[in-house]
Length: 416
Image 1 (cartoon, rainbow, N blue to C red):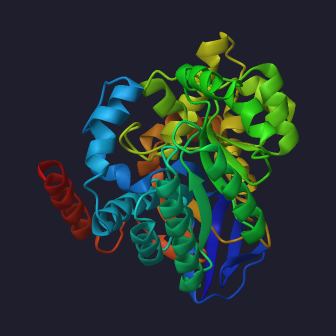
Image 2: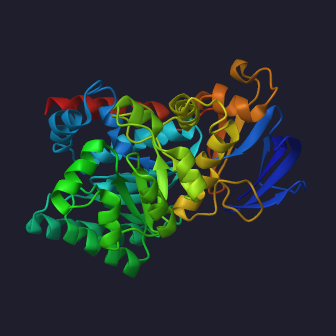
């Protein structure tokens, strides 16, 4: 199918965007198309890219707020997750996909349990995703073997789907839940199968202290020593780092996923953004799961990312709006190795249209500032992913059913 978006604002100029199949084919030339979208009073923007999610945790939204991280994980989240089924994850992921479509996210990087359910949800909802089955062995050999089997099975399952929008990855949880031996296996398997690795890194000060007590080194030097750090690694959080560790991550090509809302809500800390940027690291943006955010709105994430940095270093010029915009788009595309995050000929057709006739976006002295500091997900009128219209005029098929199913399964989950 071909789509023509006519008379739309793009980089300050009114133009036309022509999509053929799943690619952006022409910009500026009006071409006959199967479907025409009137872009009057709308601005075209690359679909936002969320590089760290646990999508089915939508079911845990508002379940365990205002707790310390370890108490939150060990006493609330992990016990409830132990009750999850693949169908729960499927329905929770459909709710996440619905929320992302409605707020302008077209691609996400996800790690969780029962990920076949998430893969089914993504296939049905039309988004683009990099999906990893969580790997936790708790330093037990028998558990590690079980996790290896589940990992291989999930990779085969996704590849068997033969869906160009869904990419398999590896999901070792963290240095405090995965053994040195399993991390080595994951590194080798990633190289053999050409896979990304999705990992939580240096999220808390405690993580660094515990790692030093266990291995004699902080997480980054330890991981570097075992050869785990590489261009394949997307490291979520990455807060508690020294200048030398930031340099090591940049030299190894590790991609950073910054999760400001979750990090602030759980009082984990704030990434040393300027040092990371100046080191040459690829920095992207993620929301984390809805149990610790509590939404998937990447417009909100951009705003919190920039204002948190300004307050942290006491400098209002740090992370200007354009930088926040780039890490939410281009940074995500680079992190995931996909031709997305920029509206240009040849790129995948992941595009959102934002309604400019909104009070939040009026007046438009500076559109980029408005998008980062004023807009929210409800300003998105149309969402296109891989050349398919997923939402237009803020309408999505089966929205009511998805909401009802998610509410029902969430209530059932906490009562089991």
